[in-house]
Length: 640
Image 1: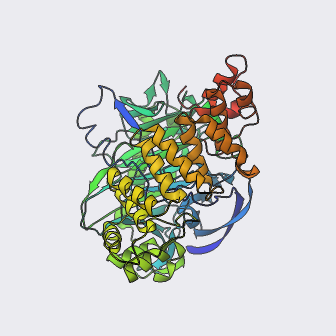
Image 2: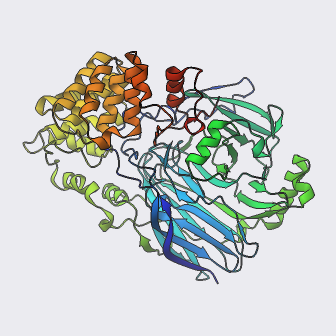
């Protein structure tokens, strides 16, 4: 018998903290960095590459308030279980499939992290490793990977339980749902994914299911003769094409042979069944397969370099090593595909044990892949699986209120419900706007709680400027936000300048400063407006504002201004690694190596170091030269 239960699932967890209230103004440069391709790629290979990238995560806010202080936390888990499998999902953090345990074989099929430890690897900063992550809409991991999803239970025609986790994704403006089904007596977990674009606009789309598995002693198999290689560089990627599974003289079907962090995208022929597997020396391990819609397959390696090993430890807290095998809509993660208006897409995946003979598993790679392909043929049964998506659902857990808010403009889903009572304080002032035609004025002492970037909202805000109630700084502030999201940088700047003329707040002045820094490349004006933002006397306890000031001052030649500000901050602020890093940078710019060394030393901790960031190793070298080796715990170099 299969059961679906909701129960506490306790692990050690770091505090995710609060969102950064500062709107993201051109801050996704690494995740959506530039790239170059080798001459080995054809025009067809490059057809979708680079399309659909973004310059801001608005209307989302960054999640960078986490720490590394682990405490017991009871997540509320959704558990699908029968006689053979136990699948543990965590709807509170993106619906992650956290564990897939095979009872008869007494084998965990996934890499189950012993802790919940966010790190700066996602498009909104916070991301955590382990399990199976569902990535929708855009490169850079799911914007909701650390956010709660709705979780609901429904039944199929045989009265078997189906778990549905879903949300409204705000960057693309669509609803996606993960429907999980575990048939009675089966050791196959089925996932049916649906994406609904109910708008009249074409949207760029993206999907990758990312599966963390153990690295030690494992071998990766896939039905491919070629693969794309994505190498990490300093602020960019390099994409090449080579024969699978060899690169730089190594057989990288054995992940432990990878020298550095790399992505390898297997080029699965159109006519082949779509699957990827990891097997141990006995020929057994996780097998993922899908219907043809998911044509891409990938393996990610941290590699054996010091930086990759350190990242592995940094994201968990023990010495176990993991890799990720992945499945996606297109062949690489540099690509987004257009999704037509008023369209619903769907596909199915299966997660189970893959099994081939041990001598095949450790023999010739192509022979091993053929053996697994035969096994896939023997269990491939998607046409027999009943996972209805449009039936009645009993909601067990709430996600955000944004689906309910967006439903006020028109239906967002034919499949999933967004009850009005799911809305909270984040939607409160926007509901007020829709009900009354204007935003209430904010006194400027605290930053905005949330942002909305819909075109109809811009029209309402601009119209409200003609009224007594709506003609104020806060309306102009949000007009600037939406214009920025739309790519109208000059229009955004004009709105924020007009907002500051009505009322100077740290929020509008900060935005002006960031535009002059990031978009207009006018450092003197950037510094002046950031000074003005700080001179309001408001926001000194806002981590996001102060971090922006540190980045701006130290990159615009105003190091002494930063050092003066740093000395006035609270002890808690001065203990933040990111702010200490800016302080060390300022001292180095002023020729004060000894003072910089009081911050960058063996005890330094940068909790939010970014994937691909080289700041710590670069500063270490500048301070200590060749005399003092960079400690392994501070080495995050992925491509050196």
